[in-house]
Image (tube, rainbow, N blue to C red; front, top):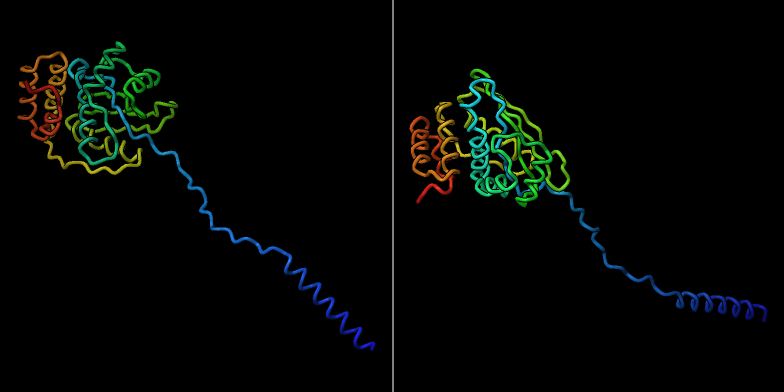
Amino acid sequence: MEHINIYRSIALILLLLFAGCAGVPKEETKEYEKPAEIVFDQAPKTMAVLPFENNSVTETEKYAPLSKGLSAMLITDLKNSNTTLQIIEREKIQAILKEIALSQSGSVDQSTAVKAGKLLGAQSIVFGSFMVLGNNVRIDARIIKVETGELLMAESMSGDNSGFLNLAVELAGKIAKSMKVAFNPVSLKSKGNPDAAIYFSQGLEAIDRGDKEEAKRLFSNCIKLDPAYKEQVDNVKGLSK
């Protein structure tokens, strides 16, 4: 009889344990949730290139037109190098600079650059200066983020004053690198004639004042001295009648 009671007690315990296990809800299987993707702040991709300030010591007036010429070269080099940068047209930049009464060869500080960038709808803006001293030229360039005024790039380069076209390509490459975009420049066979750069820049000034015939003459002289400038001339808008 005692054995029967023991068996009954064991059975009762097992029954209670079984009932208890059955009453515990199974843990729900949750689907794997992919962690939220981290979005890094991307470098601004809409860019404007302002005219460069002329700080030349040698023949200051002669090299003054390069204020426009150098920025125009950079615009062409960046547009034609298959980058993902959206480069604002030179003509639109000129119109905005005229609107804010900024001298095309005048000084451009950071606050002025930011103001121009906002009016142009640019996310980033390039500005700087150049200086010709004897046969040497130095170019200083900066890129700032228009929204915050953050400095994105500060570069200086120097070379022979006959190589403006090559220096512009080199600087365009540095700009693209700082913005983390690909840069595939068109190969140049520049003869390195400094007067070609002057003629090209004077042609831009003629275009801006509406003298197309004078512009064509100056551009023609430019290409005769250095055929490598043809790509630059072809990028100038408003030349055809």
